[in-house]
Image (cartoon, rainbow, N blue to C red; front, side):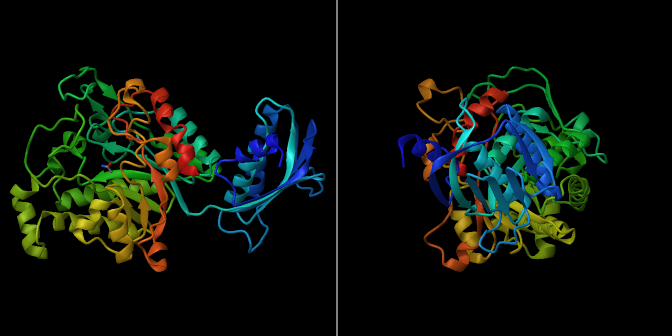
Length: 471
Ligand code: ACM
C-alpha cells in the first residue's frame, strides 16, 4: 500500500473490520444519480446528496439500480452483522449494501471518510465490510448543570452518528435544574428549571448569583427525537430519582419526607434533600414517565438512582413504615423497593429501565440494565447476576476530567482522562464467562457539565476523546 493510501484508509474512524484496498481510484463525476427506493434508502440518500453537494457534486435520487451510487438497506445478507454494511468502490461506481437503515447510514459515513478534505473527488477503490462490536454505543450530555440549546444538542447527535455511535443519553434533570417540560406539573418548568446562581470555582463559596434558567419544550424534544432518528441514534432520556432531586422539591415540596423551603441547588455536589419514597412520589414519577414515554419512542428509559444519600430517609417515619411493611433491612433496600416499583411500571409499558450501578444495592430485578460508573465492578457484579450492563466507568469514560496538563486546561471538575485512556478502554471483561459477557451491551462516555458552561467548552471536552470511544 502506498503511503498516501495508508494515510487515507487509516483515517476511517472507527477502523472497519475489514478493508481490501485496490490500486486504482474512482472519481465521482460532477453529476451523479443515487439509487434509493425504500424509506431508509431515501433517507440515507438525502445525506449522500448533502455531503456530495459540499464536494461540488450534484445528485439526483432515483429508484433505478443502474446508477453510479447504489444504496441498499435490504440486502438480506446473513454475512452482514447487526448495523453492519459492505462498501464497494470500483471502476463501476459505489455500492453500499446493508440489512438495515443504520447499516446503510454507517456505510455512507465510511464512504464520506474516503474523501480527502479539500482535495478532488478521486477516492480509493476499496471493498470494506464492517459491523460494530457492541449494540450499545453511547454518548451522554448533562444539560442539568448547564443547559445547552437544541441546535447544539443536534450538533452533538450529528457528531456521534458520524462516528457510528448509536445512543444519546440525555441527562435531563438535576439538583441544579429540571430541563424537560411536563404538562401535568408546570412548576417543574416555572420553578425547578431556574436557579439563583452558579458556583464558579471549586471552593463552594464563589457564586455568580445570576439567575440561570432553561428547559426544552415538548415540541423541541420531538424535533430532537426526529433529528436523531434520521441519523439512527436512539435517545435515552434520564429522569433522576430518588436522588439528585432537590429541584423537584423546590417545585413540589409535598414530595419531601419533611416540610421545608427547598431551593434549586446553586452549588455542585450531592444534596441530602431527596424525594420521599411515598405513594405520592411514585405517582408523580409515573405521571412524569408517562409523558416521557410519549416523547421518546426508544426501548430504554434511564431513571438515575446514583448518589441518593439516606440522611433524610433514616429519620423518616414513612420510610420506617415501608421497612416494616415490606421487611426491608435498611434504607438502601427501600431505594431498591422504590426502583423496583418504577422498573415494573416501565416494564408494564414495554420499556426497560436503565439505572446507575447503585440500583444493585437494592436487589433490583434482572430486567433492569445497570450502567456501571463507579469503575467496572458494578458492571461485573451485574453481568454475573444476569443483568444487562453498559460500561461507563469513572474516570476512564468521564470526559469532564482534564484531558492533559492542568496548566493548559480550562477550569474543570478535576481528574485526568487522556485520549489514550479512552482509546485503550475495552468493555470486554476477561473475568466474565462467555455467557456473562453477553450481558455487556456496550460502553458510553459521559459529559457532566458543572464546569462546562458553553458549547465551545463542551466541544473541547468531547473531541477528540469521543472518537477514541468510537474506536
Ligand atoms: C454519576 O456520575 N454520579 C453517575
